[in-house]
Length: 213
Image (tube, rainbow, N blue to C red):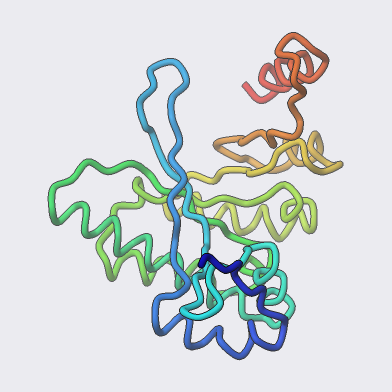
């Protein structure tokens, strides 16, 4: 009989986190990105997932905040970045078609002074061209400290990364962020759209596209 997965509590998440990293129970799940006009796959986003061998799949909204509060999200994000680099290296070695993969960089990662250096150490170790990796910062993370994020974006740009803003339209400082932070790609929060393609949401989005362009 099928049984529902058990949601681990905070203490269990912290207890099993180290073992999950060692055993590969935390891993990237790739969400494809398509060109709407051509239907071609043009990229992917690496999403962090956790499959406990006994308790089953865990919800990111449950375990990621716990890892953030405990200061472990940096370890998790670097581990996920390494998995993405290993995947891209494998594709290159087997001469498979590749597309850029976006990885999340959180506000906590950015506050860690050598996080970008650690990313670069991993990337160069796997010898993955920077064009195959993109970094993604959520609007809420960007709003949490413009100067800190601007400095991190400058370093990422210097290293050759494209920097995306995720969940644009989900916060309250969108225009200020657009004015002050040089994002290369803006990803709209789907909740910003309403069900009417000709409605108010579509009108506002069209106006935002004009401002961004």
